[in-house]
Image (cartoon, rainbow, N blue to C red; front, side, top):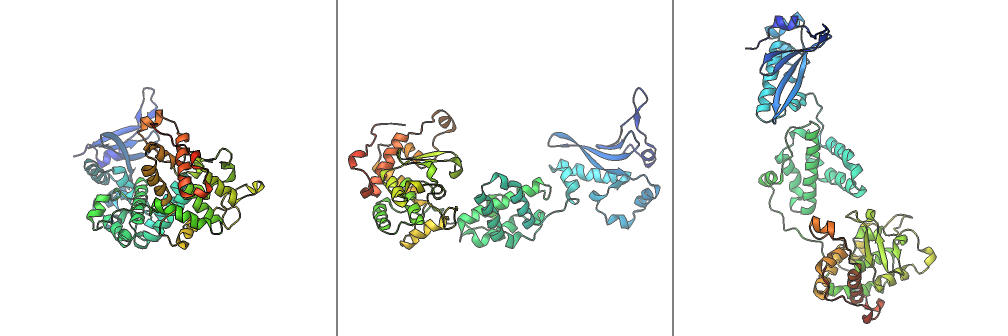
Length: 434
């Protein structure tokens, strides 16, 4: 039995300090329920409870001091029952005890009583609305490409099943239903969509729109998603085929797309870095390409040692030095880079099924088999992969440009011997360890 009564609640007054000034009073009813009376005489209910080992004071609502209201509660007015307990702003003593008991029980079970208190008050959005909210919340920290891919993939693959559902009603079964059509047919995309659904549901939880954590991968696998086919790498051309392919393409019209694709082959850099490369990043005399952080996936600047073949390609593509400004390989629209598909199209026209990204694998395989005297980590650095532990990366900041140049000179000589200097100009560095 609590210490307070209806009469005591009605007659409760603020406290007084030593000078006789009114101060806030907290009258305890029991089990963490307090009646709070402000210096101005306003009365409210507060629950003090332990949540995850920490004390939390949770406001429950104002005190209903009207006699008619008290009588109505005592009489069990059915009209009041239509308003959920957690939404009632004015509470009688009996109702405050009921609300406090429910939240206290939730806290003991490991839940968050404040979230539960506000759950019905918060307008819960649909999944489609939450996708837009998540996109707006995070897009400033993403690249344009990442932001567009996030939104487009969910609109195409998640919204058809989840879009109209409230985010607090989405569990593992609903996520499985959304992923099932693409889970084995498009495994890479399916994993991205699964992760992005998790981001949306995590934001929903942080905003108080749902109480459950997003379903994890184990829940989804147990919910009916079959094993995916083994994840494959980017399709790569066997390095033995690269010289014949280069010679064939070199004999055709050197369009912007074809030149960019062949430059990617010779430099081992990613498609995005090649398509966004500008002439001011190139030093033809020093045979170097200085890629700025914004053009790199790692967001770190990267220097590429250009082989004679790569330099010859650039000089042939733009022989007039006065015109070497702006994008090296411009797209059809003035001032805009080529699209990724424009490079892939050149491969398809040549009857190849590999990817442009696969040139990196071709180069790396060649380096491992044909240049074993160059340390493996130098070959990794050549294609802008980070190697070593955090401590090693912190203390060893060498970029091994000389050895990377030996690699790319050798690669250029292998792929395009007609464009390369004499073999004697390529000086492998032997017996050097990184």
